Amino acid sequence: MYRKTYMFLALLMVMVMVLSSCNIGSAVDGRELPDDVTQDDLEPDGTTKSEPSASLEDLSEVDVFVPEETPEITPEPEVTPEPEVTPELEDTPEPAKTREPDKTSKPKETLQPTSTPTISPTKKPSLKYMLEVDVTNQVVTAYGQDSDGKYTKVVRQMICSTGKASTPTPLKTYTMPGAARDRARWYYFHKYGTWAQYMSRIYKGYLFHSILYDAANESTLRQSTFNALGTPASAGCIRLMAHDAKWIYNNAEAGTTVKIVQKKKDVEYAKRIKAASIGSALPLTMRIASIDTIEKIELKVGDSMQIQGLVTFTDNTEKDETKNISWSFNNNGIAQINGNTLLAVASGSAVLTAKYKDISTKVEVAILEPDPTPSPSSSVSPSPSVTPSPSTSPTPSPSPTPTPTPTPSPTPSPSPTPTPSPTPTAAPTATPSTSPTESPTETPTAAPTESPTTEPTPEV
Image (cartoon, rainbow, N blue to C red; front, side, top):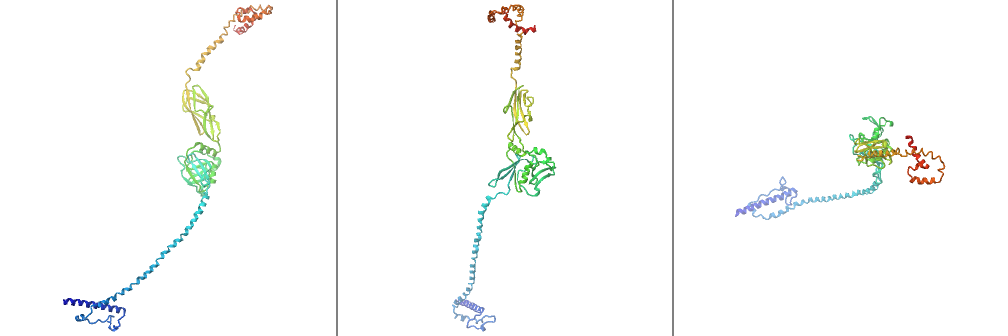
């Protein structure tokens, strides 16, 4: 029991000593000493001199409630209010500077679109023309601008020759360049040893130019290149008549669009363009005719008919070109043509082809057998039947009548006999009713008998 109390008191003493040392240490550290403590009471290191330890007996008199003064130590943490400096965070409202987006008033420049629309409709491409090359019909078309600035107005059309099958002209869209070497009044093709007029470059080696010449002289024209216009014949360039190439040379500026395309085939359209380009009418169509257009010819062996070859030209005129037409049959020996005459030779069928320059037409020909009762054989049989009619001339029975003629010769001597009036009355009665024997008795009947006798007399 006592041991426990002693131990408890000892612990209290220790606690009192610890607390007292803490108070002294804090006073020394702060150099603030209580009024009852002098400098001499301090140890050399600045600590207060310790009191002699009390005995256990003295401890019994110690007030155990001394530790209640310890709460005076707690106020020291009040120094911590220094974090009150944090109110500097109030400066963070600087993000309010985000009001700077008010400067986005720059969108006021959006007023510009109101001006641009007014400019765009009035603006038109600065280039006057767009060129289109139709490789199907071999035609170059120059389009001008319509009221909307689109290239829809046909300004000029020109016949041409594009690349042949082995060296075709590419089907693409190009923009014409504008360097000095891209145009030439006369241009020499070193690879082919030929010249051309009014060269305008499309792209690299693909050019617009005239038909070809052997020298830089118009009198050296290669006729074959003129004849080939309207057909693919070049090494990839676009050949034109000289005046058409000159128009492009003068009017298709640098930057002009060139479209190379394919279109639907139209022979008549292409020929009219060619006729306009070369300045002369060209044949468009042809028909074979006799009186009217012939769609099929039917003849019998030995028959013939007249035919014509009528050609319509690009100037809408029609001419008879029969003499200049080449005629041919796909089955020889059926019929023949001499000049403009068609003769049926043997039975069968054939197709007659007429060709004039670069156009042609065909018509079917059918040759039939003659009728089974040939008209020539019947015409021979009646001819003998006709010939007997002249044979009646030798049959005239009046040949015996010459015998009475000598006898009546004396009778006319008595002239009184004709004078009587009965003689005329006897003549009408005698001719219808009298027999041939009575006629010699009358002198008037002698006259009619003389006419037949005159013809046989030479035979006699």
